[in-house]
Image (cartoon, rainbow, N blue to C red; front, side, top):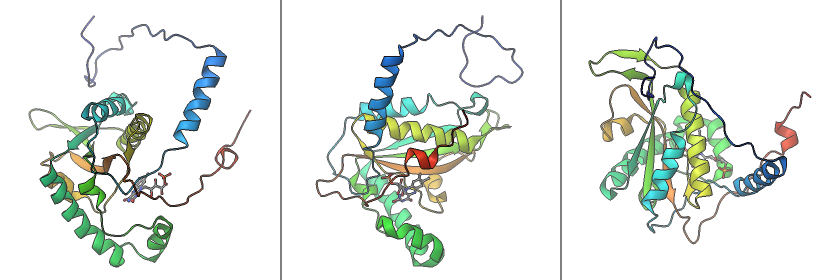
Length: 232
Ligand SMILES: Cc1cc2nc3c(=O)[nH]c(=O)nc-3n(C[C@H](O)[C@H](O)[C@H](O)COP(=O)(O)O)c2cc1C
């Protein structure tokens, strides 16, 4: 048997290996699911961060969790850039605020601006310098091989979205707060961080502890009944 490989070797044959996870009892599953549901319901997007440091290993572990996500054809089309350097964070903030000012001054359009109003956001992005870490997530739109050849990636948006969901879950369950920030347009991130031409910025995720005076918008989530259609 060949060594397991991290990326598809196009055309290789299917080589199955056994998969036998321990099956929990129904009671164990019920307890785990109820606890997870309760804990995840306390997750909130935080926009006011403490400058207190967080253990870097917790962030690395959360990124490792994200990298276990399923992906189209197992192409794992993601790169996570971990930024802790204050100078780089400052440059990201300046570039993001420049874009956001144009957006909030009208580029977004009235419909988008009114959708944002309940969130209380504006063009000032203190979280980009206050949070001890920024995780800048890039999508690998295609695979770039060592000779500069390009290969198609499948379901990139879906795969990276799932990975980011798992990242946010891991950060929250580890006790850290995060924000999914999508300054638009985001091209400056690839330029600033020197990413290759196959990568496109997907989101900036500041990570840290909430500021002592942190507030969040008073939002209500849809109930299970509102989001679930049962066909049983
Ligand atoms: C794809 C995506 C993009 C987002 N972009 C921004 C953003 O640019 N700025 C921001 O402040 N919040 C952003 N958010 C956070 C949402 O506003 C937030 O998740 C939503 O209001 C629900 O709040 P909650 O996460 O506390 O439940 C984004 C969330 C997602 C999923």
